[in-house]
Length: 422
Image (cartoon, rainbow, N blue to C red):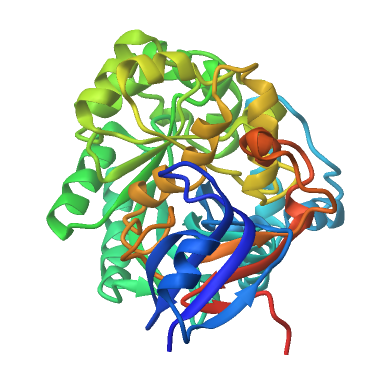
């Protein structure tokens, strides 16, 4: 039986918003998107669900996150680490100290809490990075889509190959719940060039996606280019890598990863703050998508992603929250609101909405089911119920303003409202 979902405003994302909008669904797929008058006349006999003075739009996509760290703030307090420092390298050391103090069995409930927080904030797909692999069981029987990337790092290639062999065995499972499994080499400063090349070659042969933290900080740039700075002086001694400092590459992190075979469409890149026009051109030619995480970048003081360079070069941009180790929430709504202010008008509300929906869905390979509202996609959408609706011509700016997270009243994934209790 067909169902007609009605709301005061409907935002397809890939086409103009609709006042008095309607979404017609049959057998779990969208078969019509249009006005209430048009679709009511064309669907006599359909069941009707009227959300009233509400906004209906696609689920959000959190393209870069670490949901296993959802309980990180409480872990840090228990470990006596407080809120931690804000500088990049000091923050890395803080994260390592806290994670070392956490019992491994606590990672799965932390991940489960992150999944629930994602649903509550209207998120339907994630690009999630996991360091404790058994915690992936939290995804079984959940409706989230996207990629779950199994993380690896290290400077000793022989050890890395053993880790990668273990990951290879897990990749035979194909999925965790509805998330496709992939690999996450951590970053150019925490993975040797030889190991990076091996990982990307392995991923290519296994046809699995990858993700990488890239060009996040000035400290990363100086380390990759010159083998100098706080990463060499503080991080490497802290983790016992003093004898593994690589020689200078005389390359930017982007150029270094390109030389290692990592600039490919199937490798999702996160942060991309410290890049120039040449780097942006490399990303564009490779077909790479870059996930911006502005709240984390601001918290750690690493700078702003050059979104104008990316736009000029034609690099697709998505949006991510990173983790609760460096952000205040897992809400992409909150990320959009911050980004709208942080980038000072360099990104229009319509661009931010696309970054938070269809761009992320494409990067995670789920655009056939969600990311926009159009005929042929699955019955996946969210509903916002603000106390006061904005004027229709102010709708997109309103959606990129603070406060939207608390207004999520329904999240339909696979035709079911996952926010319904009982």
